[in-house]
Amino acid sequence: MKPISKVVCTTPASGIRRFFDIVSQMQDVISLGVGEPDFDTPWRITEACIYSLERGKTHYTSNYGTIELRRAIADYLRKHEYLSYNPDNQILITVGVSEGMDLAMRAILNPGDEVIIPEPCFVAYKPCVSFAGGVPVPVCSYMENGFAVEPEQIEAAITPKTKAVWISYPTNPTGGVASRNALEQIVKIAVKHDLYIISDEIYDRLTYDGRHTCVPTIPGAYERTILLNGFSKAYAMTGWRIGYACGSPDIIEAMMKIHQYGMMCAPVMAQVAALEAIKNGYEDSESMIEQYSQRRRVIVQGLNDAGLTCLMPRGAFYVFPSIKETGLSSEEFAEKLLFEEKVAVVPGNAFGECGEGHIRCSYATSIEKIELAIERIARFVRKLK
Image 1: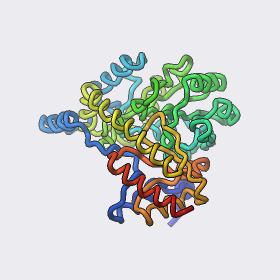
Image 2 (image 1 turned 60 degrees about the vertical axis):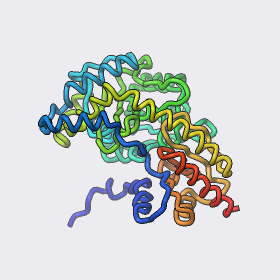
Image 3 (image 1 turned 90 degrees about the horizontal axis):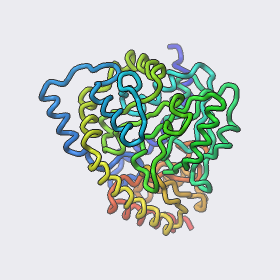
Image 4 (image 1 turned 45 degrees about the horizontal axis):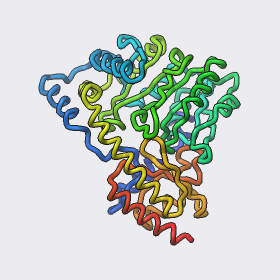
């Protein structure tokens, strides 16, 4: 047999999934590892899906997605962000934001094009660029700056091959949020160098302190930004796999072409559920977000009391404490903690080299489990001293 793709062979497996697989083989583990809400999807959303199935909604939809959902997304963005997208040709329903990321990269990149990606970042960003033939160019952010990259770092990384810059705030894994001023500076840089902007805003609703800045609302950003968002996090709909992309008609058409040959359309039942979520699920979502905010205070206080320096995240549902004072690497800390105290976290280096010396803990779990996990982590840290 001839060898499979070199790009695929040289791409490491997800550092998140590796620990998830280990945890699945163990008992009595408290998992702070996977970024998934512990809430079930609100019943009104599930019920809308069930009713639609009973009425026979089991067929293909338009490649772009149902017009009802696209109109609802356009209405939502107009109401909450004062953004105007034509639902006929500027919105594409995708199979989760994950597919939206893949489509965006394959739609704009030619072989060798570079994409600037602030790190630590979601584990799929760099592989998405590589699988599309591009070259990911990481730019590091650190705890000292609240895990928000400086605009000057973006400009310093630009070369003649740079095609796009990836923005994702609030950020997975750190919970960091860039200021509006910093985002405005990054947009100016993108305009100056004629770059695309990929803005993954899946955690936009989970912004706890102040108002979220939707990147295409920044002057100069609208026409060059591919806005990616979805329903997984804010509405506890991870398993439904439903997202959307917004952008200029030519970009959305290019993404739709790839989508129509690869996926045809997002599952119709998930689109029905998403329609109910965006039209009537706002208060359900607000209730979950309020509980996340309470949990973040508990976990941050607990980790700092345990001796692990931890910033208060401004968004998402992750904390990214430093474990440098323990003398262990991120991998060593996570493995020892798992096997000795049965607490699952994700080593920080899974999210890029500058994540080394940290671990990611998700607080999308109950306060009771968070408190028990903190108790075990504190005992583990004491044993290391």
